[in-house]
Length: 162
Image (cartoon, rainbow, N blue to C red; front, side):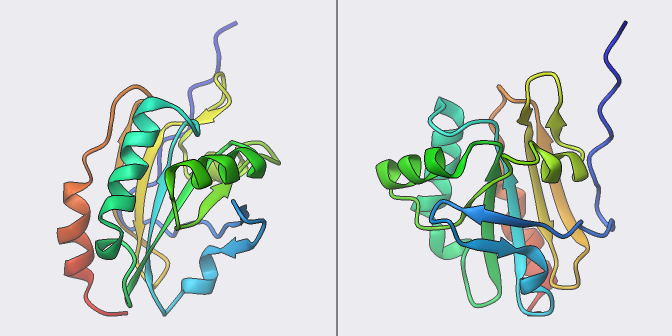
């Protein structure tokens, strides 16, 4: 019997499902906390400690000032447990939230349509959630294909201040 096709990823204009996940330090981060205050870039990635994921999140780390501002925030999400995320963040110097979608396994990735059920991991889904809670820009790549975040900066600039 063939596996069911995964749901389509959410797109521009869709209401972003709320999320409440623990970060690498054990703190609970909730998307709706930013409603009306900041635009939020959600960066789903397959696995901590993997090559492409390390390169992508290091790119965010190295340009963090353009992702985390008075009007914007970045939240990175994987199905890894909190303890793995903490070790990876400490090793790589990631001082932005790495959220654990470990249990129920992949529930948030599933709600955004970016969970690969067979592999038990998120694909490279990227969603800019405007301060009104709607998706303003998105990009979805296969697990082995690195993402190009160059479209993010014009998209967030086009939103203006919340």
